[in-house]
Length: 351
Image 1: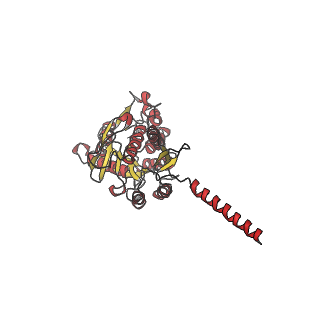
Image 2 (image 1 turned 30 degrees about the vertical axis):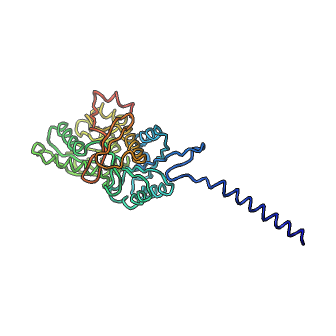
Image 3 (image 1 turned 90 degrees about the horizontal axis):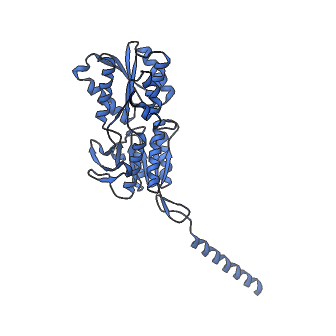
């Protein structure tokens, strides 16, 4: 009996030692917003969520974001739902919250619909910014805007008027009906159209292609069928402008219906060269994503809070200031750039 008692005591002693060793080893969990790079150093994780997969503008935007985060030695997480829905973005954001990322940058599918989940992220200590398509001011710390919305809206009407001689029916082919940036640009288009010099121009419809190629094609075909006297389509979306230009080219309507708006040079070069789109506008989506990444890093590193008057260095892009808007604050990339026959060859291989 004494022998068995001794064995039992030894077993208890060994198990106690093993348990203590296990506690000293630790769980391997990293601090909030960080992961281990394998060498013991923390790597800050920054996430960006675009509207949907397969969008060329979004791919370039995320490329720029990733470049910025890699420059500051962080980890970029690039996400997007398969379809441009608010539900898909909510699911992704919930996953990012559970992963305890340091920041979330969102190109929103809905201005107000993401507020509950983004407020949840902020309450968890995650820095939240929007880029390209904004969320409301209560859902973010700052917005990164590509250009002044008024300038974007007005210039597209001015260009269209010049292209069609100031008279005729025009239509807008937008992205989703909830896209805040598209809606704001269209609002400024309508305000520009109120000027007397546009009395002979008529906006007959605003159609929505949901930033999907096939739907944008269908909406363009429907516009052409519904309005046989249509003179121009304004598409302030890279997916929509390429789709509309292709439809008009395929139907042999060059010279009868023109297209302008916001497009990628790589996708629009052939349509600018064949005259379907005499010229169009955009900014560099790589730079826009880069600025968003640098803004996220500045927030996480507490260089800025997102308040009016904050300034920071955005790497190769230089210095930026946070400015006040009607709904929160923003950082402005710059003015829209015109792409035409004289310069499209310089840009079509860039993005």
